[in-house]
Image (cartoon, rainbow, N blue to C red; front, side):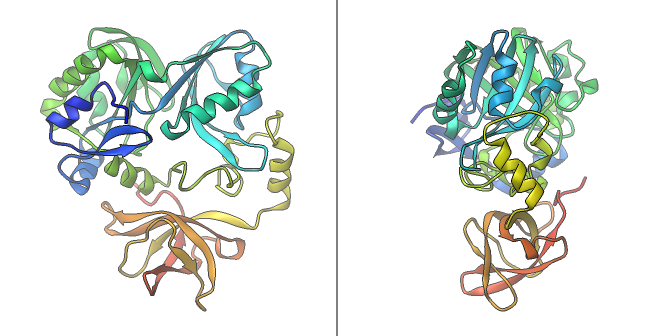
Length: 360
């Protein structure tokens, strides 16, 4: 089991540690609901250093990215980030990822922890363009500082104007007296904030500086359990649950990051899906009765016939009701459709809803 540069800090704070994607990670500190509310209302800090970082360099770096990802990375300008995914040859998804344009000849790809080796091998296999590839995952730490007070809490630590950074933009500069920190206005919570990328040797100093600066704002450490409830309230996909090697971007509702004015892996087959339609779709649902939906629970119709499966589910701390995502047969995918979630032996009524579940 790998440790992040801050594992010992989490342990000293009394975090409950669990194995996650091959890392020893903090799942919670004071409790999921309290941590969830901290991020929604004030500011919290996640150690997500288990994520993977690949640098692609050279005049053909963009061409390689265009070949292996669905979104149009040619639209990126320096200082902007983009959400995308890498399709496989069978119509599924290798991984979803963030792409950062550092310069015309350098890009940073941020991938999911559980897929680092798989993603690296996939991109390497398609690199017949002489692009220099660096897997920097082991040397980098990543903190997500999320919540409505994030910019105010962090501003004293950098000359970068955090309050006026556009969503999905980034700057590279000094932060907490450390050079070359990537300050990114991104996140996985829907409550605003920043993600900071920096070398492992700077991790503890940066963590301590953040908590000192954030003290007047009630800043707290947040575990992976609250990260999951926060992202689910926004309807953000989790790789391994809502998207995987067998789910297509079109089925997953990721048509908005799938651009057919370029050629990418399996683009013809995915384009045909978009034009001809699919047989199942990822939907969002809310329970209209009491219950908590969980991953892999059956979704059924009024007659009890199985029409799909839950991919992610929880009791929403913000809405105080059961919410979830799942794939269902196309006729049941329209908003306001009545469906049922089979929880143990009970078919609990639910309704298909529009995302996000949580609206500020």
